[in-house]
Image 1 (tube, rainbow, N blue to C red):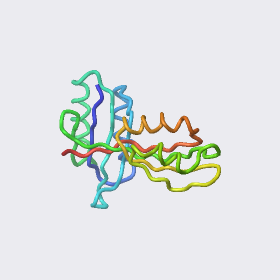
Image 2 (image 1 turned 180 degrees about the vertical axis):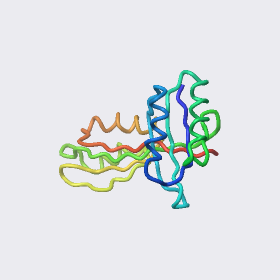
Image 3 (image 1 turned 60 degrees about the vertical axis):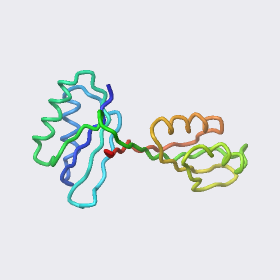
Image 4 (image 1 turned 135 degrees about the horizontal axis):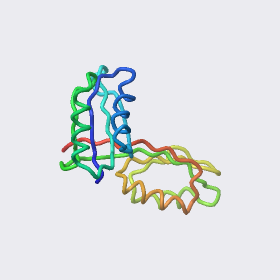
Length: 157
């Protein structure tokens, strides 16, 4: 089962390494990781998506995270209502696609065309994971040249 975990941590060097080390020591892969400073510059929030079949081990990891001196709080959003988003920047081929046609293809998504010329366009999207996947499936038809994607971020309702 996929779990959406967050940790509010002190904004110090080495914190990310210690936290990711806890997950790797238990054999959990972090599917997605996003870290950013909060409204308080002394704190950062880490959002991690992990696939954990064993809930007992996951609970143990959360307890161990809480014991780390740089960790302020740990939470699991998995069984709560929450919003999640990813940001993706996509460079697509426009040699065979007019801007109007590209815009029409993108109509059903929350996207912005940041740049457009005769050979390529750069598109920005902020969506759920599922919507990002659907967007990429649509853009494969045009031709994706390059893609940069953040990890997911989440906040409880």
